[in-house]
Length: 381
Image: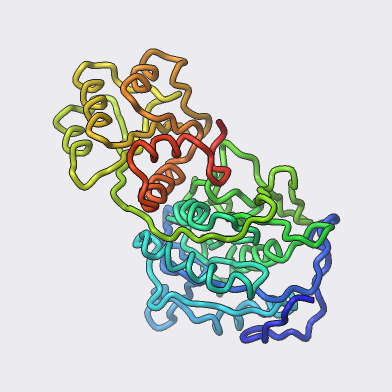
C-alpha cells in the first residue's frame, strides 16, 4: 500500500470524491505537491486589469498583491472536500511570470524531482503569460516522467466575486488524482489545465488575454474536456516506456534567440541578430508553410549562419499547421541552406527544446539532428 504523507494544509476527514469520469475511479490519493510560482502575472482586459490565481485585492489600496497558501485554503474551502493530503512549496518572493527564466524552470523541476517518490502528482500554479513556455520547458527537463504535472492559473484572482481560479485549481487537482482502471495515473506528462480543456503542455499556447479559455493547442487535440464530467481521451495521452524512471535534465542553455520575419525586413536589421556571438541557435518564425524571402542577401546570410555552427530551426508564424519545406521554392531554399524543419512545433516548444539540447552539452550538429526528432510529444513528424 502506498505511503501516507501527513496533511499539512487540508483536512483529510472528508469523503473521497466521486469518479472524475466514468472510466476513471479515484482511490484515496497519497498527496499532491503544489509549487506556487509566478503569482504576479499581469493580464489586462480592455478596461480593467485582471490578475492570476494567486492574487487578491488589497482593500486599502485596490492593488493586486500575492497571498499565502493559507489564504488560498481559506478562500477555496472546497479543496478540503477533495480529501487529498496537500503539501506546497512557494516561490519566495513570488515573481511576475514575465520574469520567468531557465533558473526558475530548474527550480520547479528540482522540486518535482526531489519529491517525486512522495507524491502522486504535482500542480503548478503559474501566471498565464509564460505558462506555455514553462510547460514546454518542464516537458523536456523531466524525461521519464510517469506522474501528472498539471499547470494552471486564472484570468481573475481567487477572492473576486466572479473569477475562474477556483474551478481551475480544483479541476487541476482532480486531474492529477485521476487513475486508469488499472490504477495507474491517468496523466503521465506535463499538461496545462485551463477552462474547459486539458492540453499537452508543449503543444499549447496562450491565445487570449481576456478569455477564460486562454490556451489552445492547434496541432494536437485536447487530452480531456471538462464539462459535467472530466472526460479523458486516453488514446492521446502520453505513456512512458516500460521500465523507465525519472531522469531530470535541469541544465538549460539560454543562448537561443527568436527571429520573426516580416515583409520589409532588411539585412541591416537581421544580420546583427544572426551573427551575435551570444547566440548558438535561432528559432526562425517564417511565413505560411515555412517560407521566407529569396533575395540573395537573405539566403546567403542564412547559409553563412549555419556554416558558422549555429542551429536555425524553421517554425511557422501560423498558429495552426506546420512547416512543409518542399511545398514551395521559398521554403526549399531554407532547407538547402541547412535550416532544420520545426514541423508543427510551437515557438515555445522549439525555443525551450533548443535550450534543453544545448544544456545537455551537445554539439551544434547533434542539436540539429535531435531537434528534428520528437522528444516529449511536442511535434508530429
